[in-house]
Amino acid sequence: MWCNSGGRWQPDAALVYSPLWIFDFGFRIGSRARPHFSIQNRKSKVQNPMTFRSPIFRKLLSSAFLLIAVTLGVLDFYITSYTASREVQIVEQRLESEARILQAEAAGIPRPSLEDWARQASERAHARITIVDPMGVALADSHHDPETMENHKDRPEIIAARQNQNGVGSSIRHSATINQDLCYTAVRLTYQNDPGYILRLAVSLDDVESSKAAVRWRILWASLYATLVALIFAYFFSRSFTRRIARLRAYAEGLVDAHFTQAPLPDADDELGALGRSLCTTAVQLRNLVDRLSVESAQREAILSSMVEGVLAVDSNLRITFANASFARVMGASNPVPAGKPLVEVVRAPELREVLTRVLTSGDSVKRRMQLPAAERVFEVQAAPLTSGTARGAIAILHDITDLERLERIRRDFVANVSHELRTPLTAIRGYAETLLEGALEDKENNRRFLEIIKAHSIRLNNISSDLLTLSELEAGRARPEPEVVAVRAAVDSAVRTLESEARLRGVSLVCGSIEDAQVLGDRLQIEQALVNLLDNAVKFNRPNGEVLLEVTRNGDGRIKITITDTGIGIPHDDLPRIFERFYRVDKARSREVGGTGLGLSIVKHIIERMNGSVSVESQLGKGSTFTLLLPAAA
Image (tube, rainbow, N blue to C red; front, side, top):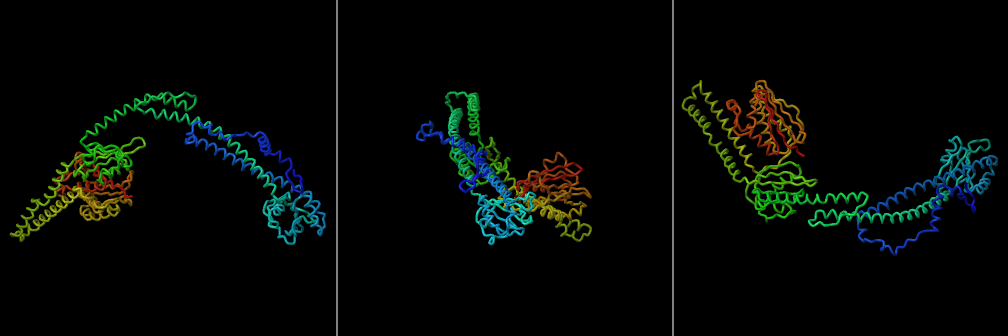
């Protein structure tokens, strides 16, 4: 397995006929008949200089190069590892055989002659020889003075030799004694009738590393040959593939050209040929479709341009994609407004940009009234999302409601002023007061009743005035204060405490069901006022020993849901659509009896809608009602 050549052990023919022999044979053949590639005529092979600029051409070549590099890298690692392992196995087998031969010879050597014997045996075996006693002390060493050597009791190969049943132990490690990487093989030795001795042989691994380096260089040369050949094949294939794709692209781009006269594509029996045939088949249909869409687009643009209402369309980046003449006139911009122009350069109203941003973000339609500074008029803006494939946008239609807004403002002013001119309560208060002053104060049978009437009219007058003023402020559309984060539980607790005494007097139980720790954006005082109004109605229009249940949960769409359920008289189905109107009463007699103004639910609706929420009601006559508030949760 190993032979002695020039005083150095080297692998014999067994290694040559190992699996690595194919590399040696291949490179010898290649050295005799290596093909010659001229690089002087490289440019003549490239008929199309644009080929190297093609991304797919570069990708195909890069993929081929990477595939070869990775494959050969893995192969190099595997074969190098196999070579090293095979070399080490051969060395260990050789050392074990030598040790078995020297084992019997060493048993009969006198102790004073061990060192001389170790040096002689080392020259014959071409290996370093060490004899260790049962205590780990080196008795003899062929390459070093045993007196200066460390204790060898803990050496891995010695421990393995003593533990293994066959009495052999091996290890590869760095020798601190001679400062060199060695392969050790130790066998148990019976010396002077004591089986605890160890005979250890060691050789250098330089030969193994030399073999690994030789194999690696051979693989490197093979990799260069394989890479060169593969790149040549990949180049011609990629060039043909790229040119066919370029023809297909040119043909596809010409389909939408108004003067498309390109010749048909050449036929081929592969996927690109099938693609070419499909393009030819659909060319006529695509042309008809483009013409039809062009006509329809022109018709839609003519309709939108002739509309009185302003029409605006934007993309996801708030760039104008369409604006009709009415919109340009309202904004004081030149007509036509160029497509692609940023919205902020045309529209100075932040509210309109906020509406479009909200539509793009949420995907929901938005309807809002606003006054545009450029036109000094009031518009009702209806915005909706536009979706075309993966592109998103929004469209807004501006309805001029300046005249309607003026009429509503007059009506609001009347509501605000009429609260100061309610002469009926004032007349009643004045009449009973004068009666008391003229002598009825001494009338013990009627004076208290007169005072209670005065008090009732005063309370009613104050309630009507307060509710009218509150409703007028809500409808005025003034700038809202910055919304704050409101804890719903705190608002509910405050409203319940406000109505506890009233509910106790009327024999109604206020019950708080599931109250989640939720937060909304809005005005805390207004939220509490809305809850107080709903709880007040639930208590006043309830039956004796009735119940009012209040719950706060999270809705499936991320909004906060507040429900107030009572066991009262209920609301007729025909009256449900109108209960949020001002001064509308279902039971007028009972409403006046309990002191209602007819404005509470209208105030609730305005408060909730100003916070981008909604209010709804469900009721069954004689069984009770359930009011539901939906408010956006705080982020």
